[in-house]
Image (tube, rainbow, N blue to C red; front, side, top):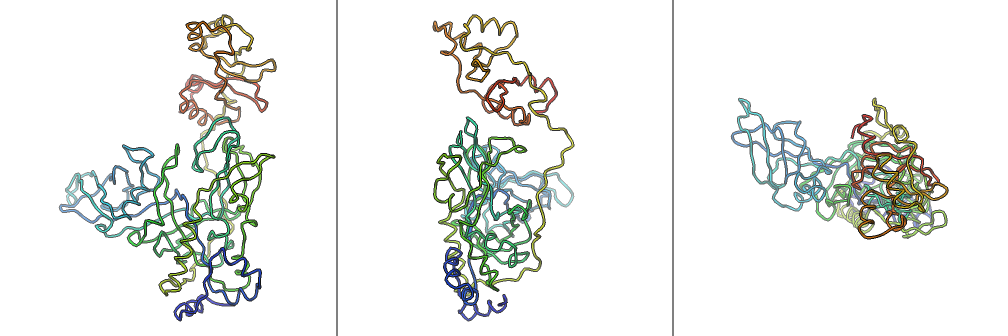
Amino acid sequence: MKTIEEINERIKKGEAVVVRADEMPEIYEENPRRAAKEVDIVTTGTFGAMCSSGAILNFGHSDPPIKMQRVWLNNVEAYHGIAAVDAYLGATQLSEDRGIEYGGAHVIEDLVKGREINLRSIAHRTDCYPKERIETTITLEDMNQAYLLNPRNCYQKYNAAANSTEDMIRTYMGSLLPNIGNVNFSGTGEISPLNNDPEYKTIGIGTRIFLCGAQGYVIGEGTQHSPKTGQGNLSVRGNLKDMQPEFMAGATIPGYGVSLFVGIGIPIPVLDEEIAKSTAVRNRDLTVSILDYGIPRRTRNVLGEVSYEELFSGKININGKKVKTGSQSSIKVSRRIMETLGQWIEDREFFLSRPVENLPLDSEVRPMRVKEETRFVADIMTKKAVTAKQRDSLKRVSELMVENRIDQMPVVDSDDRLIGIVTTWDITRALARGEKKLPEIMTRKVIISRRDEPIDAVTRKLDKNNISSTPVVDENNRVIGIITMADIIHRGVSR
């Protein structure tokens, strides 16, 4: 048994034994009791996209003073309902002129890199704050205080993502190729902080950590902290002025939005054999679920369980198919975090802190309570879709469209399985070109919907693909209906 105080004394004397999390398994397996006795600290690290991040900034008072009502930094709006010249800049907030190419995360990165930032603000005048608007430039050093304050970082583990649909989808887990063409995952496995202390025996409120190249602190459990499902996380804070650009980066996730890559390292004090054992975890022992992000959230399929060892290998097996894997985290930067933190300790620049309160172990994420009824495709779709057979003549298809006052029609085989779609534009163009057969002019790659999809998801699909309707198919790809934008609008479903 050791105490944090005893380990700190060893740090002061330059006698503390510090190893990286990826070195500890071999040390422990060789002699568990000796590992617990001789190793004092195991350094851990993770570097990845952590959307739930942001910064508290104090700009100082102008003369005459202004009570900021709205404020923009490089045209990215920050929340200003705090005080006269304080603001919270969220990492995922988007630029008003550059969209997802630039956002709050990029502003934070620019500040840490020492760049000048355009500050613009408007306000309502008061007797003590007579200034109505201001525009200037500032740097990080110009601010009184600037703190990184992140509500949810450093997940213990996170489900991997795949996509079973026919179309590529863009998500916070990156681009997911159709037909389970890839699997994306997040986290650093055996070197990730919470995987080395899964019961939070040494990590709690007040734990001193490495945060983006500076010393920071755990200030509590993160939002959506869910240790029951193995998805615990942390809320952290640190001085932005001390941070280093190599351990922080603003990023654009294509087709999704902006995020901040955050580097976190936590020293795990080896107080006893039980903690030594938990820091000897290996990637083969850590498993995550592969979820089908192409399926609506409430019915999302689990495609399998996989270990981090398999994920890091670059390929995994799903139902007999070899699928490439891609990480949303950087092992290379995470190793630098572990090494830097270890060097700080050896140089007597970093000491351990005892948590003042443990993190909860029994919390679990609950969904939002929504009073409005969620509407699904099955609620409003037209169940008797007018379809064409591929052997039908263009004349027959045209007649069906006129009779039913529709401008597009699913094409099915003899078993009513969807094989294409044809529109009035396709027919008009075919007549101009002298084409006569339906299989020659129909579109074979069809955007489809399923009866259990939420209407909001279908609306997004219609907008994204610039179409006005999609066939509804069952699990065997048989057409069981059609849903149109007109159905959505006329039946009072909000867009």
